[in-house]
Image 1 (cartoon, rainbow, N blue to C red):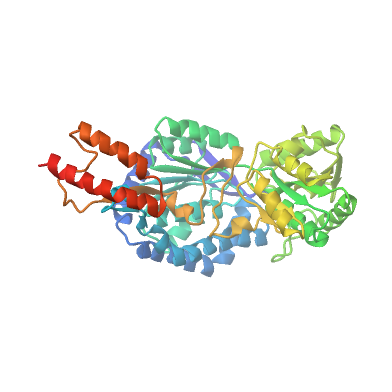
Image 2: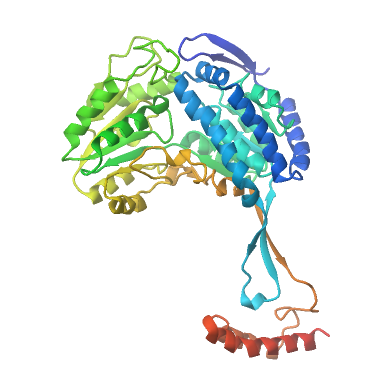
Length: 518
């Protein structure tokens, strides 16, 4: 008996549809189709794969408002966040790789050392096979399609397993079928955690997971049983550092958007703000003014882009935010909220927490909601130490007019991404690799590495085959050993001196090889 998933609109509670978890037989058939598609896709020229992506691009543009409406109903975010965070990012990724993928995936010639003179070296970027993408609920189209498209462009079929909280039925599947995208090039499987586990046991060539640290650890543990390579894009507790010489208005505006974009439900949301003590009070007051001016479903009816924030997508995440903020208040922190939350609402108000201590959950655990802590600092060293005092290391931002200082601080922040006088913009550039350190994940995608990570980077060495043998081949002889000793003495000196001393040794080596290989 398969389980039933009931999908409701997080804002209204309206039932959108129900889904039955797929049977093991259905999942096995999905993997069989992916394996069959792999034989076709790996032999397609890169331009042919990009042509398939162009079909998606045209469809996303033509149906953007319908898709936005569907995403909002599934996720509860506001229409602007759906357009920018989900539709725009997918279009930008396709456009970037249209220009750069052929060069990124072409064979790459690399240097051959002098001791291997006469040979040629290169790297082939070959497809892996079926890739499993397990995506989260916060950016349901973006986090499904962007890694899937990277994998497909690299030559692999893809199976997407969206979150059971935002299955995107009638959206993801419609985009793929109605656009005319290559059949079975990207398949979508709707189901919960058990479905994901069964798909992993079918041994895809690679797994790409975006989600929580707990979920990432579970997937890594299961994948290890089959030695399946895994890419993990996990949580964050991102710091935003504001120095006394920053453009204060810009820094405040950046903190507002960085903390509340997508209702704070982003792994790169600014959750911890560190402000120089000389401007701390002014910064907090300006932050309150701007937080208080924002509209949410509790304060305003949606009107074609009029809302600044949507609601929380899942009940459990709303509980986490409430629990963290309430616990901080009970432990002595000062909590300011833009308005009193309505009873039973799935919206959470923009929230500022000050006078926090390092052990408070609101300061050290991922919040994933519209709340930010604000802490003063006195010195550059203190700001860096505060920013790095976290098990996470995904993104961060530094605000100062002194760009040399910004660069110095950026180098010392333990994170995969840093924005200077900006927030969350690094992940908006498809040319930049995206990923984290520490508990924020393993690996990178987007940019050049975003395609290479879905490839078997195959090292190839070519010799014309004219000689009968090589010096390091059998037989070993005392004479050959003495020659190797001389090679060690001269081969690694470098420069003209090294080449001049190596030349006669090389001639002697060739003569010895000819004699021994007859």
